[in-house]
View 1: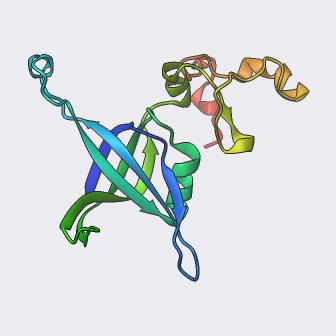
View 2: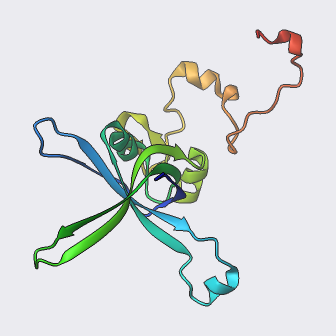
Length: 170
């Protein structure tokens, strides 16, 4: 069985490219910094505390990753370990180890990522995060009136204890 599950932070924005085939296929490459979980004493002594894992994905997964994943974001991926070789320009054999990912999950909330990354909001119209916080009155009027339904800054809604089990439709 060849299955890899990783959780780490992206070291850079994913890079999306397309193959030169008759039907071009999207592929994205990115690197995850995965914490080794070593002791503080070893970290203080200068031991490397993370592994940098090269990841590649294809097709719709690649387009998803390029659209929603950003440098510094904590993500979780599932895939397969692949080892391959190629000959460089000098004729030397080179070996590459990477993870071919086929599942991608967010491992932190958008609000947590944006707060840690220094602000900015998600711009759905442009398919990614923008560097400027959203304007205060940029919502349509019907959304401005329903601001009380928005979750607080920690992304959790308050529990309504007034509901009884008999009120549930199932």
